Length: 248
Image 1 (spheres, rainbow, N blue to C red):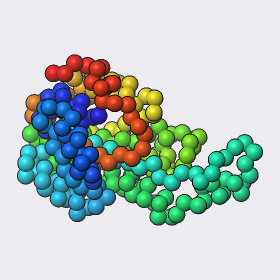
Image 2 (cartoon, helix red, strand yellow):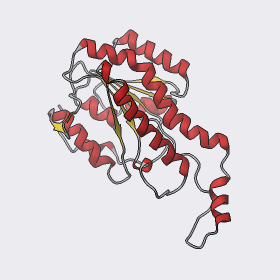
Image 3 (cartoon, rainbow, N blue to C red):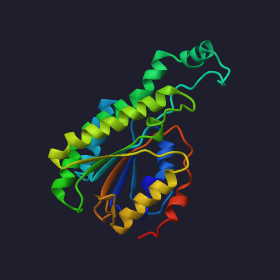
Image 4 (cartoon, rainbow, N blue to C red):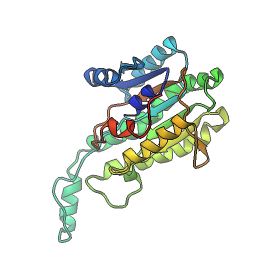
């Protein structure tokens, strides 16, 4: 959805990364702009991240924005819980997940975000040096409203990992400031995802200011990297986003 919106609004190149080639190819061919470039890769591998960075560096030499959008839902409760459920029921519902499955939620939702950002810092710095857009380079992570909720719809690992990701991006906002690289987080909920994305992309398209933060200006030399492989919420179709604003 994000890749298509940027591609349709004049981005020079939009690199999309994921493990499944057929999914990437389908996304790349979903628009006729010929500027979505699929790269197969697993963002939980530092070696793969290094290879991906080298590939993009050789092709364009820089990026302006990096979006870490990968995520999994993680272990869910193994049985329904009601107001009459006992502490033993609670323990059974949430305690049957393996240590490995629980930790793997953090591996993709949080740890991979960290190493992806670190791997692409040189290309983001080169984007600043190129100065092809008005804004400074930016990293964006897709977190979730689940990272703020006290209520847990299904499993605890997801919300905990997303809370960690939100805090990670807050730390990077301070840590990367001396280098002129911005750090921001999207925290969508099921019902608000399209409306939020519409607002951001519309702001990007019209080059307006939202909450005193300048949003991405899509430019003919704008290079963008999106790390995909999302396995949770069924976000609405991109047509719902595209109709919020006219193509360039």
